[in-house]
Image 1 (cartoon, rainbow, N blue to C red):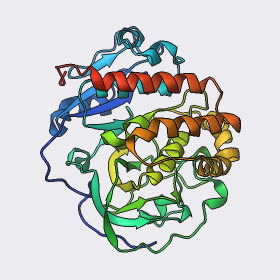
Image 2 (tube, rainbow, N blue to C red):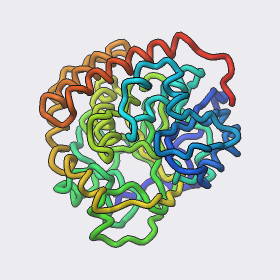
Image 3 (cartoon, rainbow, N blue to C red):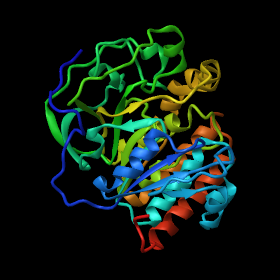
Image 4 (cartoon, rainbow, N blue to C red):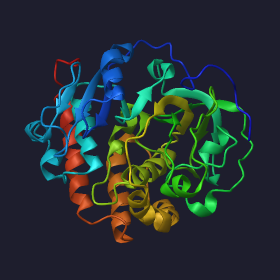
Length: 360
């Protein structure tokens, strides 16, 4: 394994900037979990509000003090087009939480899941500009190899890339990373094949390490412990007309293509959460991941062929072209384009209609 800097567990860079409003966003179909309770209790450490998005399988009597809980009726009452148009019983309902966070004035959105317990590092200040080694033009990268010697890979990495050796990291440099993926200890984000056939004890990644992937370097990232700054807010969009196990992975590929065109990196950093995974049917997970096993390499190639112009004002057009390409190659339904259009309209409106009361 290529060595990295050592130190306390936490984000790659601790900011000295004043705290800015933050929103913690997650979906849940469960009664309040230990993770949800911890986030509600400690959210003030990030000057944050906690936004919880329910679905029609969520408990009818759900109640978590210190949170903003939006059931389906409350989501529809937001006025967002996407809330009315998006399918229910899908993880991508989380999009409504992102929109609500923007409308409440969030300058940082940290998304997680209800089975990820925050570690101390989760509460450390974050900075969009980081000092870290940057890999450019490296093709597929198994980011997990820089945090452990174990044979493990992130969900969404093409299987024929699993054994690719880690590249020697260059010297650290300053780079803007408006998307930052924190890893998870315990039961981390891997695919069903790893869980079905590999060793399956608890995983502990190395602390105090980080790596940035920039233009031409690709690694899937998830929606389980990811921080987003305003320049990248449009890229939060999760597609609905695709497999549940691929929605955040395919989002990550679109985001990496557009981030690279804008000169941004995507930061991978040591764990700031530990996942105590909710029950899963691993064979169902495997079935839901098959579209990724078969198509992720083709998706990368397709996105590399899409014309993407630099500049914040060009991001919506770049996203539309990216999803048009994904629809053209048959990995998302063409109906996705209507939801994306609603998302972009809602996001623009949310930025113009900030509500006064940020904290719940």
